[in-house]
Length: 287
Image (cartoon, rainbow, N blue to C red; front, top):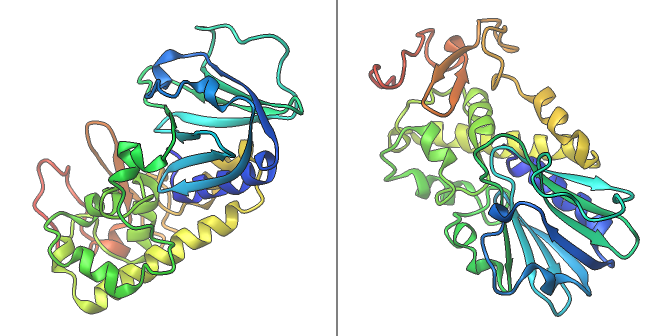
């Protein structure tokens, strides 16, 4: 799933390629992708793009005097830029294509979604804050006002484990499964530790890891073309998705805990005092 660093890079990429250009055609191919119908997608046509914004994992294409095109790529969605879009309308039901946006230059982008879950979401709205997922977002961890006292206040009464707390978009916007693993590894903290149990020193360490991990990932992604962002993300991960490989810090074997629809990876030596975590449903919390 694209997370804050990749969506931030997509925002920068689209700012460079869309702003100042007119949207001439919006073609929904998979009707399931549309989560709003008033205004219709055609309301974007004839309007110039004036800005691209990011809200957590949401992308917002703002037009001059027209609606916003807000997108959440979900787990299997992606954006593909085309220097020249194919001639003729796309054929529904053929492949992963969900929506196409064309510019007056002949350029544009496709939104695609692999798999069968179909969680890719597109909203055409007059105000991005009317999108339920955007309205519920917590603070952005890269915002200038997201300082350590604010982070500490968010965790003070949080009775969940850190892994779940970091992924909660209503608590902190933009962090998902991969970067929560990376942040906890950088902080040398167990994913099962209760958020409210952190000492001031541990909170400082986790805050520093959060900001550093995300900022480093954003910097790595800066200037990378949309089509290469997935590979860039994977190459920069230290523990997530690397079960069975050596930890780059201590050399211990990276382990995994599986859930019904996801998994987490961690280093026992760096994060849990050398103790392997049992399946979350069977284990006691590790301090």
